[in-house]
Amino acid sequence: MTADTKKSAEIPDCEYHPNSPSLITPHRSTPTHSLYLSNLDDQKFLRFSIKYLYLYEKGVCVESLKLSLSRILTEYYPLAGRLRASASSTTHESSDYQKLEVDCNGEGALFAEAYLDLSVVEFLEFCGKPNKSWRKLLYKVDALCFLDVPPLVVQVTNLRCGGMILCTAINHCLCDGIGTSQFLNAWAHITSNPNSDPPIQPFHDRHVLKPRTPSKVTFSHPVFTNFTPKMGENGHFALNKYLQSQPLVATSITFSPSQILKLKSKITPSQKCTTFEALASHTWQAWVKSLNLSHLLNVKLLFSVNIRKRVKPELPQGYYGNGFVLGCAETTVKDLVTNNLCHGVKLVQQAKLCLNDDCIRSMIDMLEDKKVRTDLSVTLVISQWSKLSLEDLDFGSGKPSHMGPIASDIYCLFLPVAKDPESVRVLVSLPPKTAEKFEFYMTQFLECDQNIELNGYHDNGDRLTY
Image (cartoon, rainbow, N blue to C red; front, side, top):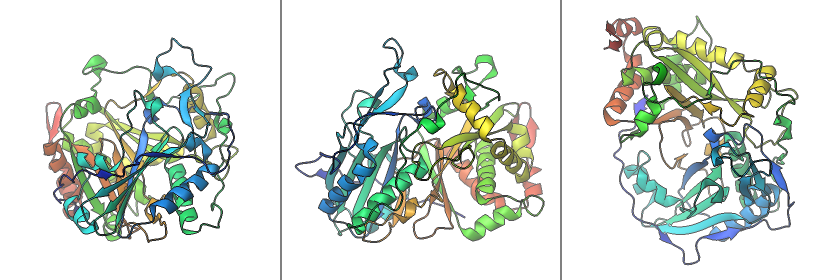
C-alpha cells in the first residue's frame, strides 16, 4: 500500500466562457408535479451535493455534452427541477425540520464552461490530493440557502493540452452513490451513442420507502440521536466538531490487490470477510489510534449499506433515490485498539446482518421525527465510492485518468482507482500531526507482526499510548 505524498499545489483561476453558466433544460416536455422524497432522502445528514471530479486526457465537444445532457434530463427530469419545503411543512418550522420535496418544473441544470491553463500531466503531478483550490473547478452558485441551488450543477473545464476536467454536483437528497453512478453513466452512454436509449430506465417513485401508519419503531437504532451533544456534555465528546474547528489536511492511501489480500490474510481463515469489511476495520482502528482518545470512550463506525435487495418487496430496478442506510459498529477505544482486526470485522459484519426489512422499516419510521439526527459525536463515517462503476464514465474519448471528490472531508471515502479496478484508495482529512500518525498506522501496521505491535500499547491512566 502507498501513501500519496505528492505535494498539493494551488491551481490557477479558471477563465469562464462569456455565456457561462447556462441552464440546460430537458429537450422534451416532462411531467410537472411534486416528487415525494422518502425519509431516507431528506435527512439533515444528506442535505448537500455529492461533488465528483473527472480528469480526461482527451476532451469531448461541449455542445454534444449539452445536447446529451438535455436528452438524459428528459428521463431524469427531477434533476432539472428544484427542491422546496413540502406543503405538509408548517411555516414556523425551522428549515432543518421541514419535509422536502422536488418541484419538477423543468427549470434545468446549471452548466458552466471554462478554460484552465494546465495540462493533464501537470494536474496529476502537482495535485496528488484534493485541496481548496479545486473548488474553482465547479461553478459556485450564488444562493441564499441549500434549497436555492439547482439539484444538478456541471462544469466542463478544457485544458491546455486538449484534455478536460468534468465536475458535477448532484444533490444527495435526490440520489445516492448508486443513483449518481446510474445517472452519470446514462449521460455518458447517450453522449457516445446518440441514437440509443439509456441502459437502465430510472424509477422515480419514492413511496416504496414511505413510513408506515401508524409508525412502528421496534428496534433501537444506535446510528441516531435526538440531541446534539456539546463538548463534555453527559460524558459525550463531540470529536467531529472538534476536528472541523481546526485546519485539516487530506491523507490519501492506496491499497493494491496484493496488499488487500495481505490485509485479509490477517483475518482469514479464522473469519471470512469481504474487502470492505477488512479495510473498514483496519481504517477504523488506525483512525482511532491516531487520535489518542481516552480508552473509556465509545467509538462508532458508520458505513453505507445498500438496501435495494434487503427490503420487501425489493426496490425496483432503476431506483436512483437514496436506497441505503447506515450500518453502525460500536465498541470502546480500548477494545478496538488492543484487539486484532477480527474484532472490528466481526462488529462490521454484525452491523450489516441486523439490517433486514423490519429493522430498515423501523428506521424509516423513526425518521418521521425530524429532530432525530445521525450521531456524529465520536464517529468515523465511511462512504464507499468503489465498486459503483464511477471510474468507468466514458463520454466517447476514453475512461478518466483520475476520478475522485473535489474536496476531502473528515468523512472517509473508499475511492476507485482509475484504470485499476481492484485497487482501493482511502481518503480522509485530519489535523496534520494526526494525519501523519494515521498514515503510519495504515501503511506500517501490516509490515510488522500484529501481536508485537498490539503489545506495544500501554495503559496510562485513561489513554492508550504507543
